[in-house]
Image 1 (cartoon, rainbow, N blue to C red):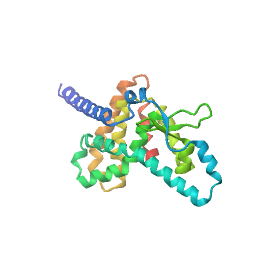
Image 2: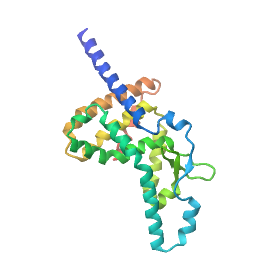
Image 3: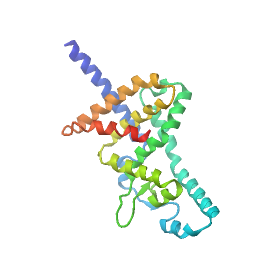
Image 4: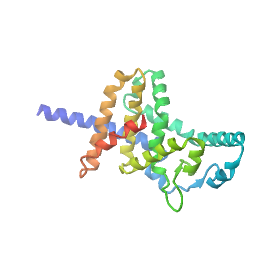
Length: 233
């Protein structure tokens, strides 16, 4: 009986973590199913054709064009910073870190968490398009534009992650839990390793519980989800 009560108490604690993170994710992610369902998409920056037309430009003008596009791209990403900061603050145990350590974790993990968020908004490769990333406001950047601004290999890695992550068919709560696990995983790059281990283990347990509960017919799904973490590091 005592063991049963202990198990029940542990599960209740896990459900509390799941609820807390689910609420935080829905409140501070602009890419939830509800928020992206009726999203009206519109092109951002330059079109792919404009990039091709400029391909014969001088090296200086090409670099200036790349810099200008990068500034536009950064401007589209920037609104997500505050959302991810607010989400992080609601992760159980996160505020127990020193403030400097909180900032380190967010700086190290922001882009990766943003990649997880934006995965749902990816436009598929169809009708001659090679795909695009849609931002929270509906503006989208084509794969060609990202290759021009960033790097072909980097962009390819991004889209490979998007494709494989979306293939897991996670719901918003599961995505939120995965983001929380990922954010604390990035502390492996810092001196916070010991401090965050307990909290990360609790988050991993919560994610596993939620995945098993939501996907009872796919008992092996948790492993490929966790296997996505090294792809982000």
